[in-house]
Image 1 (cartoon, rainbow, N blue to C red):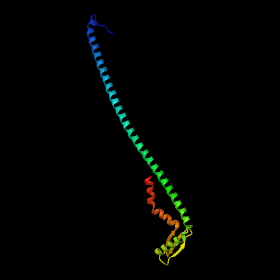
Image 2 (image 1 turned 90 degrees about the vertical axis):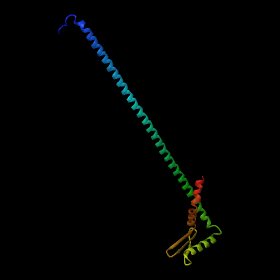
Image 3 (image 1 turned 90 degrees about the horizontal axis):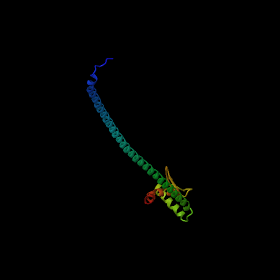
Length: 175
């Protein structure tokens, strides 16, 4: 290591001070630049986080609406099934009551007149050569060749229910 000549130290002070000032200035500039980059990076990160948050909120709200709509549709379908099942149950009860009343028709003093009218109807439909016999269920069964006409009381009751199904349906609509 060589020593500097005397007085060189003092002469280098301004150089040292200039180098120090330059280094401090450069360090301050680099620090400010790094701080600015960090602030910019944080700003972009915050903006991206805000955008992700807004997107998540929007998608969450849309998913909640879709879930609510699906749940509502399921509830409506279930309610409709319940209503239809109850209507079918009531229709079955009505059919049972009608069939019970059919058994009572055979005890009615007018039953022989009903049999005559049903026999006449079978003759009109199948012709006078038709074979008409009383059904064990009440009413008559007519046959003519391969043709068969069922005018038994249960069949006529079922047909009457079917013929008036629109009126029965209106009962549900009015309720």
